Length: 94
Image 1 (cartoon, rainbow, N blue to C red):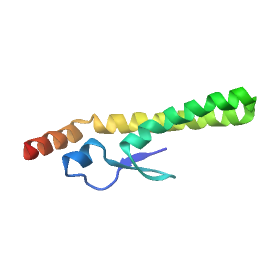
Image 2: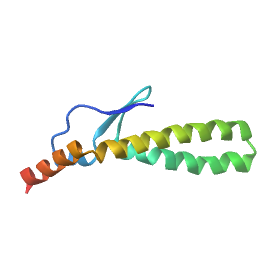
Image 3: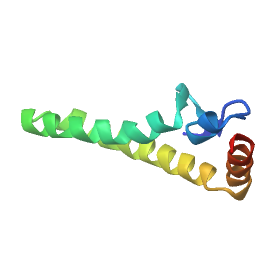
């Protein structure tokens, strides 16, 4: 799953939680991409409790995909270019 920055965030609020284009899915906020694996992991317990093993196996694969997407968002936001944008936005606000 490929993730890219959607548009060109300029304000500090947009930079702290930017819109991310997730290929094959759509546009989500960075916080939503990061929260998605956690929500899915919580559902895994229900599948295990009900003995729905095939769904559990399928969902584990999906969790791994979303975890990689969240990791890609983190690395995108940790890049020097992105950090510079955040710093400049903070200086403009302050």
